[in-house]
Length: 168
Length: 193
Image 1 (spheres, chains in turn cyan, red):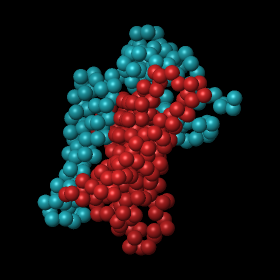
Image 2 (cartoon, chains in turn red, orange; image 1 turned 120 degrees about the vertical axis):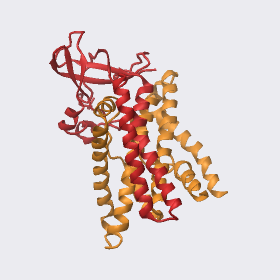
Image 3 (cartoon, each protein chain N blue to C red; image 1 turned 90 degrees about the horizontal axis):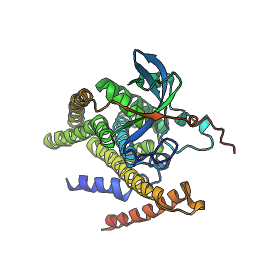
Image 4 (spheres, rainbow over the protein chains, first blue to last red; image 1 turned 60 degrees about the vertical axis):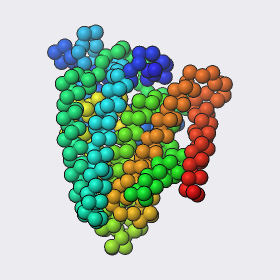
């Protein structure tokens, strides 16, 4: 079941993320995802580099566009969603596939060459590169089928997380 | 081949990174509200832990040990891990910008967590060869992902249950985590056999 950014259950069956509209361009809204930390946050969240997410360059690189048929304005915060299976598939293609192929190739090469770190390293590198090529092919297919396109779900009306002082 | 299987079981289950070594607890509590996100985060961490551990192993074997620079190990490993995180983002962006953007919306940014450094330091202590080191790092991160997914599933169920007000939120999360840790202690019997 889906969970809204404010913690409430939306029941839409999608994985949701929050983005902010930063520009409008020919019927499209250019959105910037709001960075989420990989920790639970604490009272010192405002001072913590983990929670703040990273440099602006990294965030700008993650900008994406949405079809603006709901009259979005610059500064609006929106919730975008994707099917859970698609997120899992995307993670597997990007992260799991190259690493698994690297390990299999390294073990196989070392086994057949009779041991030795050099052969294992070369095999692992080869497997990793093959994994990246397959990942690229799969990602291109997913993109052409529109699987990776985020869907607009609704506007957010709550203030951005991390703006509260946390002293109460 | 049997010792590789033993290595995988020991790293993933018996000496689980989260529940036996208590590393990576920040992401364990922070990213486990949904199973799908936890699984995605687990895969991202698996990539980072495996790649950075191999780089750390090579650096330790060919630079730090021969020149007796072992006292620089922690600092060096932190730098390597930071570089590995950047490398991961760069690779995904080059492989597919659309994939990079999609993962950026729904998964937390990969950041250096103590599990990554912990696994790198542990495998140096174990004195393993390259393939064993890679397998140790991969299995450790597999154990990390497994626990993240199990805990996320439990938290999804707890979210629907009636929890006493004083235990709601992190307290019931910690109680659940401790029960899960006790369950995983059962695997320690496997090493005795």
